[in-house]
Image (cartoon, rainbow, N blue to C red; front, top):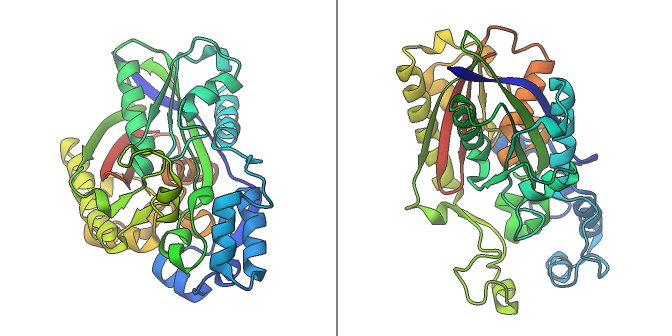
Length: 363
């Protein structure tokens, strides 16, 4: 039986850096408040969001300014200078180069993006076109922050089943374009940011290295915990002036519910993954969590007695990049020498839905 192995990683982030001090000029917050509650010091955002924030920071009536941006765009312009597929393309190009694989050699592309370039087709299709591919299948997932883990699991099954030899798995996000950066949207706006991460999976003969197991779960009974209605058919019509005026086009989150559920589900799925493979925390060389909030990660590692040196975190520099966070952290961990040949690595993520999962692999 063939096994899927990660043979290349890549990532991309916008050039624009937004630190907590700039956000504190736009809303009632501070660097100390954000760091204490999230561990985030800075994040990357699109050039459009960056220009908007600089203007918002100087606006005398911030709510009125933000409402004008939502209604008319910035200076009346609504076409983005950077799209989520642009970031996906950059991260994927890096992963393909590091894998020594040409785009035409791909058998399948699996992408997860919370907010795509278009309502349809989704980001995977747009990405495929940017590579100039005309028949390679592109599959699009929407498990939010857990999307990359779900994508790995799907790609692994394609390879194990002999259907495909090489699969590109991408997590890409341009979330800064959907948030309200006044006090109304503070709870979410300080957390989320833009970025993309990608890996190339390739079929190899069964052996020590490669993906070992995946453990996926969803609970759709708590939708109010983290959801967004933009483009959604929960309203009729899906897009309307009234929907926008009522703020129903912007995402909503119950921060306490997310924290409690995330810690619980991380503990459960990591325990399940270790138990299924007859392993303990001591057997794993590196844990990479979805980089949502350092307090969630600390609560999980404390509960499971995972030593800090066994984790790799970059949430301080990038914030929560949703589906992109795990592949971005994986890429940087490999570059930093924190993951070496033969290491046992456990990836875990929790996202909207709620959906959560863990993947175990031997590097």
